[in-house]
Image: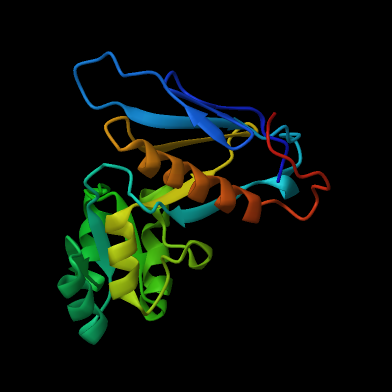
Length: 200
């Protein structure tokens, strides 16, 4: 793993050698547990970028609105799996015309992906990506994972910043979410990095 120098979860939790501790939230709303991991990577090295996705076993605690670009049987499967928005060319045209989106996650079938790229500038970070499992013909599984808590992460200025749940979650659930994220971060290590160690 890239050297996670001072892997820290904001104000509630600190990750140290596999242990997690956090203070009781003092605000009158259910705070999000956030991890800020300094990877110690030279930000000038574009070949050492870190990104990936992981399904948190206990979700993020947020209600996720999912859009699926699909036709025919795949579109029906997406609706049955609980997708909030399902469409093909008409949906693409609506987004292209308005320049706006009203969903949190985006999935596309392989046959739709070439058309979806036409609105890539609008989708930005939500553009479906095969590496993250959001370009797939198994849309039912993809929708369920997105609803459950598919977490996308990407390094920015050598730091990965993610939300790992709510402070109201059971301690064991938070531990398992953190563990899943750390494992995904290990798997996302660029080939150019030689050292792999967790913070002490």
